[in-house]
Image 1 (cartoon, rainbow, N blue to C red):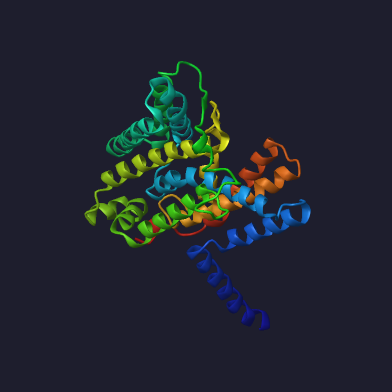
Image 2 (cartoon, rainbow, N blue to C red):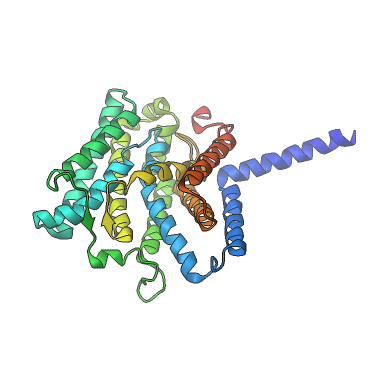
Length: 333
């Protein structure tokens, strides 16, 4: 009798925790704190100001590179063009701009509409002809990089302007405050996206399109337009992330964007956003922070890149095991 009597309260407590987890990434925040404490205890100087800022800079790069992936996953798609657009954007504002003599801002004026058009084309073709976005985005990423590499030949090299490197330097400041500009940019972008997704008509249309496209059409939502805008925005964000990455690394190489294809996906999934289901960019922010913190601690203990890949895979599998059991929004519409 006592066991039976104690079962409903325990079940109710678990349901309450599950409901809270659906509303906010509590588990990820707990793991983030645990990872930080482990780093402070086991790595000398890990809790110092410069070390914390450095981790935040790396997390900001991962978070900015994950914006487009978040949006495309929310509408029920997927974006494999992240790496291609990152390298294309970085190369365009460095080597290509110098060779063409158009300067950084001239290249920037080409980058923005170019990325929007190519990304929007993927969204249109995928929705119009029911083609898997994985195929089209992978092809478009290679296409974009090929176009940008044309003026520079076969080489993929480039040097960031001196002023640009200051955006991501851990020792740089913003209006006199000891905070690098890239962190401030990330915070502002996070706030803007949170407001858009939660409080605007466009955000509600995006969620409805991903949750149940048929219901969205009946609700007079132009789902094709939503897909075009989502993939155009994703391509632009990836290209701009390339600019931020070259500001951090100082130069461009062919593999600059490769890690961020996986990192962008991992940050979204670990944060708790599922395709067409519950989630938002703030979850991706937490996912990016958690992945960066864990990776930094592992690197501090001498783990190899192969070990890190195993860790990433294990974290994603765990996250999918937790969220895969949840009812998706499209099942409730």
